Image (cartoon, rainbow, N blue to C red):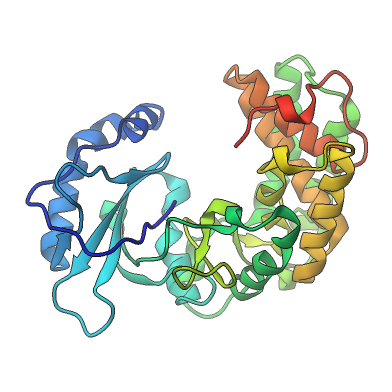
Length: 344
């Protein structure tokens, strides 16, 4: 979710049009169609409540991802920076703990939360440079800056009641030991049993019964290149995370999105080997367990593949299966070449 940074613009009186991409995406989310009719009311309410002006030129579209619209705004009366962004998200469970994570991080490694209206799924955030991201850094140079952010975000649970809002990865892993093989069976065993068993072995060892909770940290589970924006406009050294999907668990769970993106930039002579070395570099830079990082990547991509197959998205499933098997050094036969896989 890119919080765009731009110079001040002429304010506009009414709300902009909802971007078509987000309107289409909303139809796939329960309650999304209703939200598309009501989001502008939430926008105008938040502008009034937080004393904001839209910072868009007339006719300029808002920015949108899959689940939220983001608008540049100006804070009328403030002792801090006036430029901010207003993010309004389609209500869904995965987004509910986002403001709690941002509040706990308090601007250390993540975008600063300025205000939140939790019932509206509306956030007022510091405005970062949304025209650049970690995607603009050469692939092999990304582990260091990514790891710097991971270290800042990996805070341990404290006394704040906010910690109660986060899902526990270990509990979910316990459930996946049952749901993943059941779904694999329902779909006709669409990939080899050994890959499924590799995912289940991680779920069993990292589930509630097989691990210690003292290693748990707050994890940004969607920490990919485009969700890391420069902290300072015009530079590509220090980054801040946006759009968290937080859970409480192993920090190694955060590695996978850095592997399933930018596959087209892997070394064409040995893409699977390059993927494994990139995984190792990411883990080493952040002080993580490389084997566990590979294991959680397998779990996440097996889950993704089953979900994609259930929705008829064969190409996306093949990409997930390529990553899951290649990170283990056993790339599945019959998959397209990495350059022919759908890009994220």
